[in-house]
Image 1 (cartoon, one colour):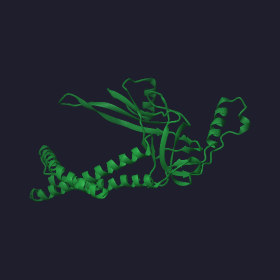
Image 2 (cartoon, helix red, strand yellow):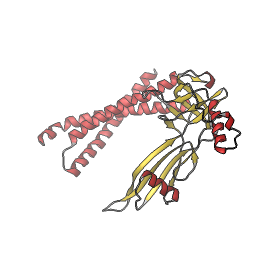
Image 3 (cartoon, one colour):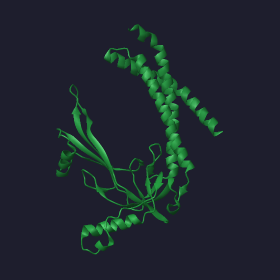
Image 4 (cartoon, one colour):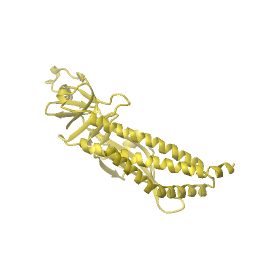
Length: 303
């Protein structure tokens, strides 16, 4: 019954949206062709058909992730098996890094440097990106049964980030620009988005688990040597030794997701994205195909 309702919904939505999308698409193609004075109706329609087909295939990637989440049982940390796992727990910070512009402590940040490009013949303008990047730091995840170390490299992050936009050049920003070999522009802005989760924040992870063998950085005899750096390194090593496994991205085809939302919210979100792409992409491809058929003769005559 559920499948029948979904198919009925797709059919009704397609009938209602098809005329509207066709009109909008026809107007857009005609406008572009008028501006550049070339008949691009047919080739752009073929390109649109291919894009719609690719997006249609991409929709099933969302469905696959949803099915993997449903099929993978949630495990307590102490009882996880090596391989694909789904765990929940609290974040405990391991190493702290500083964001590049505001120098805030965090375990993940993404940044971009932009400059303002004014329009030549009319007012206003737009912001263009000069360079962007990100940095991720590993962290601990623990529940009442144990602790693992999480390597977020390659993970899809569904997390709430704190955004900060700076427009003035501070000494730290000037040093960062030199380090990144970014030339100064007349008008610039610096955007950073950071994740600095409080300890005991609930996190959901689906990924791969492997045995954890921490590196022995400092021998115990150095603990009482009086050297602050050696003492901190030994304490850091002691925390790593408490971990029973490492969570990471397995093969390139495996899903790896870290989220501060719960499992049910993630499944609902994936389901809506799947249905939207499943309905929208075939509609778009069908419109492009119809438009290509209509304008095929005029395209041939143009040559």
